[in-house]
Image: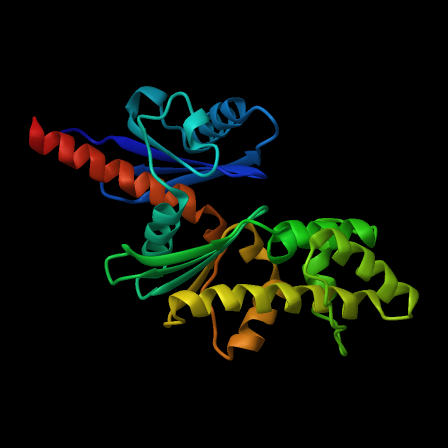
Length: 267
């Protein structure tokens, strides 16, 4: 069969990502856009973005897998796969020695144990409270009048991080303002927020078993302050890269290639 392409579309709560691969599992390109309220439109947009970016024609894309919380709204998708399986496969693709995955998104955090093939052995997730997710960081940024992109770099300058004790993101925002009123510096408050989230995340990781290597995925994996807090508490390095936020979409594209190969064997 002639060269073809497959795509993975990860419709997350905050961002929708796309990954385009060829039939040999080479990653050709990625794209990202805000999800907004119309998930199908965000999926259409990000698909067109990755095609435009790579110069690949839509007719040459033979299979599309949707994943993420909005995966069933991706109307042009050929099938859907859970984000847990996709993040596992995507993390293994980027870092083949991965055995534990921490996926931190806008509304939930997942700890995933995988085998040497990138298959899920066990997982747990925290989607009941935003205090252990990216939403908590967004809330802290808003309370302090900062852009989200400023939070990680500022937190890295902390010398004496504060202790954030709230177990609810709503109350945590109030505590952030209280800490500020008590005279604590913004950088110490922010790193305290990161440590609080890291503690919650490590609690999830312990439930599935912390086995190196650990790969940090999702949008929050780009946050240097969050990575530092996790490594400080875990006392080990974690894998991450500019592509780890696309792990769900990458994993979906890998599943798409598997589906095509199965279809070819059947035919």
